Image 1 (cartoon, rainbow, N blue to C red):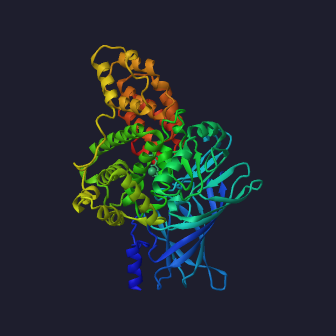
Image 2 (tube, rainbow, N blue to C red):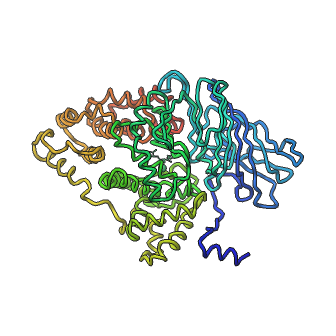
Image 3 (spheres, protein in one colour):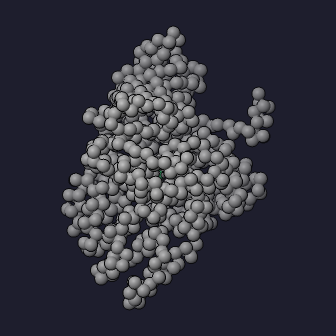
Length: 611
Ligand code: BES
Ligand code: ZN
């Protein structure tokens, strides 16, 4: 036995799986795993409730155990049954144990035997943190209600009692009943539907971590882009989105060539109503995206590259727990940037990277040094706080540094192997380092020391040997800015006609915070920032102008805050307004009206700023 295992190891055929811990889950997944589930859910918009049952198919790892603990949050559990050896359903004893407000409550089930199948009947509460219930008035078309789920990091447990951990994977089937005038999509194949009755059957045969189970219900239409991709969404968005995402197949092809075959068959995109709190979310088969990326000029499509990159980093190879989220997000930032370079050119990719690094430095400034480690310690915080610039950009810097040591093409080849070796596995930083040693550092005799690797993972700040973006990236912008600020030259005579959106963003972020009213007016009349359709530019402009007591952007800002729910924009905007005394009342009024259209997670965040 030992010899066979050793041979397999030497051949590199099998990477043994270590048991991982996840302190953000109550589930005893190292004793018993739920390998597949079957959902049977009815969507009730009037009561804002999902109700029905979930069946779990179990594999027992501990031969002695007969207890199963699932994660729940805000769920009303009606009954738990198990399927006896005689194929009869029998009640099982259960109780909802003590938990906490972030992680919910453990559902402790005591079984009389190691049953293969158990079933939980339950319904959700209107406060379920994974669910955003939009009234017809809050949808884009304002005719029909809309519902979508958002389970990352630990919200799946608020709509399904399950082992809510990225350490394990499960296949799923679902039968979903919805009002017959709406349509449902999931991160799965649609096997069958009876639209007249509003019944949909979905199936996901590839095992996924729980946070990748997703459902959306609304007045959804579809428009194909190519054989593999298309856009779903309310009618308003379809044409715009199909145009904006026209290059999606180029991105998949580039990723296939670099990192191995796309594993998930289809790559569709669902455009959500503008209250969607994120830029995008990487579900297999279908990415959920904000309409704020529909800028009309493809300037923000790196978001598509990012969610697509997750098809490898994250969805194929998953962080075993949320303290290792850099393996998902930092690696994805790295891959995203490689895809952008291949499809849109190195220059654009370099600009986007430099903007990322600038955001990282801003975040480093605002944090205690002990809170800047790539591998944070578990401190009982909300795991969502781990999705920060440290994980995304310090993670990306670590990989850029490795690529610089190995040579970028060799590093791409290494990553291709890495995705293959760990496909459909969950790993942590130690697993990554072991793989790196064995398949990159040792065979290529790279001069990378254990100490350097430890500095990247557990050190504070940015290592002094990191490879940072070149100072030349935005030199032209710096020059123009300098001339405009120091010499009395009209803006219209300066060379800005060919600037990319990334260059404009750099410019707006770097402008001094004390411009005169005349300077602001000159900027706006030349470039029309106040009416920019680009949400990134608009946000930067408002952040610059409003604290200077200038009102040119007030009307548009009110409109923006009332329609857009993307946290990346509204959180800094509200923080800025809260810090601008003469705007506080104005802002409170907007927030009172806009709050109900924001996602529950965005509401919680903004409430904390004391609005
Ligand atoms: N997986 C994240 C979205 C997410 C983050 C969900 C935190 C839940 C908690 C997604 O891949 C992502 O990173 N989205 C970014 C866009 C990207 C271009 C950096 C976002 O939403 O801003
Ligand atoms: Zn991501």
